[in-house]
Image 1 (tube, rainbow, N blue to C red):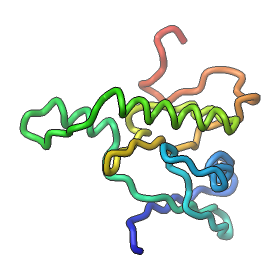
Image 2: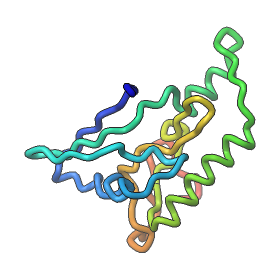
Image 3: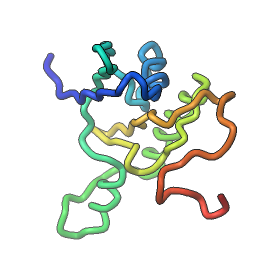
Image 4: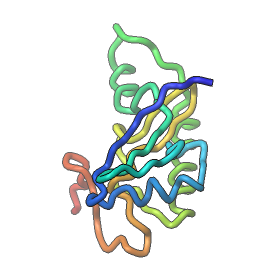
Length: 138
């Protein structure tokens, strides 16, 4: 069956591919895990299912009366996101970059994406965050 995919190419010197490669063997319905991984000369290629919208786009579209009205239960949506985070933590990983851009939606299912800043829990010495998403107390 054909399905749309996204191919992510990561320079091998980058080192951020470790979390995503680790999840190749741990599928979860609320983590966007790679469908497969291929090593090329100087980079790793990871293939993911293509999701429709980010949570950020979904939230912005709900503010505008001129755009499509999204019907989803907020509690159910965040329950899915929390189940994904719980699974990630159970695997021994911290995401370190949870934000609306890194939560995707497709056909009623929310999934966490972009594990580029992820670290093993025991190797997470302090805060890690994206610009614009830093808590004020940090």
